[in-house]
Length: 228
Image (cartoon, rainbow, N blue to C red; front, side):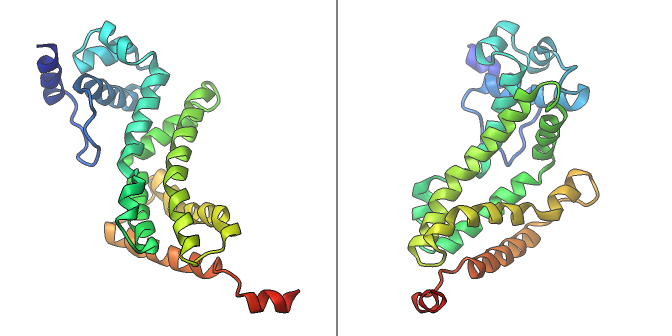
């Protein structure tokens, strides 16, 4: 009965963006959506747990049973967003070409990164970095861990295919992420330009990967010998 009423709360409450995967618990989904909306309306500091519970149509007891505090809510929101561009190793293995696998993930990652909801969470992290550094640390740790968990096996595949040098894998990943953000991230962040279309993102990703693979191509043995 409680499960049914929670599901009804989800339907009548804030709507989940279509690009987010459904939460496993409908009560948690209702709470996270309400928290996000209130963070946007009132600011992270001013939004209260009671307001969040009321908006989500759950009791405070349920809210605190699922989330310890507002920091925990923010952590869950970031983790939920990260889940959208996570790619399991098994999925990567199903794409024989490592360059194509990297392109597919990069397009998904970039489009999610530039959505207004992702930008809003980033702004909260930056705004709270002084007074509540834990909030900024949560955002940094979760997004970094998600990127590294996916990029590590993909760069390993590029090394195995002989496309980049084994000693350059970490530098390749860092430069790749920097190119994915580029100026467009900051332009969208401050509202100077709208998020690029999927086609624009795809073209940007292909150019970036092509240039980096050329830049990080392994040095031929003969060339190394000539330099020594």
